[in-house]
Amino acid sequence: MSAFALNGLAALAALALLAVSPAGDGRVAVLTFGDTSAFDVVVGAGGAVLALAPSAHLAVGQSAAPDFRARLRAAGAALVFNPLLAGGCEPLRSSEP
Image (cartoon, rainbow, N blue to C red; front, side, top):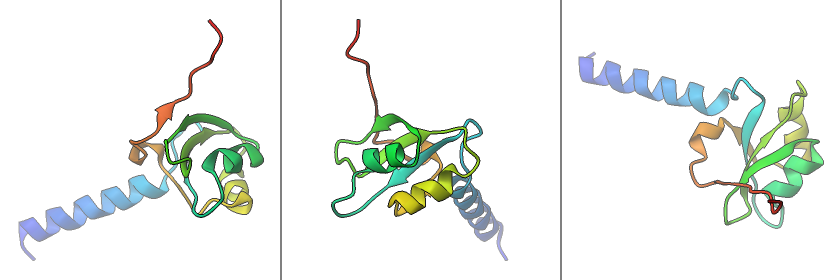
């Protein structure tokens, strides 16, 4: 196998690992489809919404609960993945001064 092919496989493996491994602080990205909003899924799973995409189908949420990913799926998340891949989310800002 050529060095180019080996490098490509290594890069794909690293990307796959990044996609499925959550951040160490309990942050995850959540993707939903249809009428389900990512905001509602994160809140319904007991997490805090840190960022939300304009489409409302992608959000970054956080929880210290060890079963947070499972609760997100039960609440309607189509995909739960590493938030580093959710570049389109805008941080939520407080309306308080």
